[in-house]
Image 1: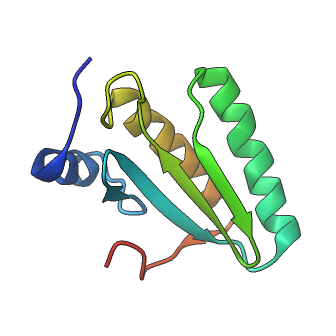
Image 2: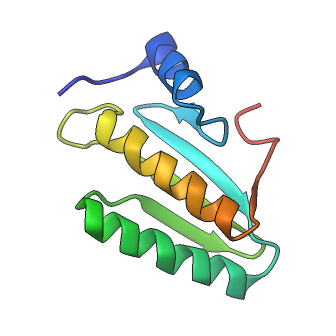
Image 3: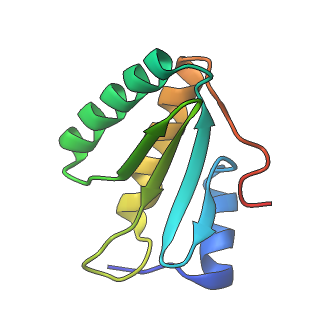
Length: 107
């Protein structure tokens, strides 16, 4: 299992078109501006369903007015293809719900 870190991780995010996501230590993170708690809860539910299907589970932190999503492969101690695939699904779910990523995150 290939682990991505440092510049290699930033390149992998860019190549995968995952502009919502930013490196954070041995993980990647995105913040979605849900604007209200009910919208955040609905997105959290959809992410949970996708995570169960993928058998890969992100850390989710829902607060008013945003949802933070963090992905890492604990067994690899780094971000792997599993994380990049699930990040793409999460980004798509947010887009489908009309929820934007925080442009200040990772800046």
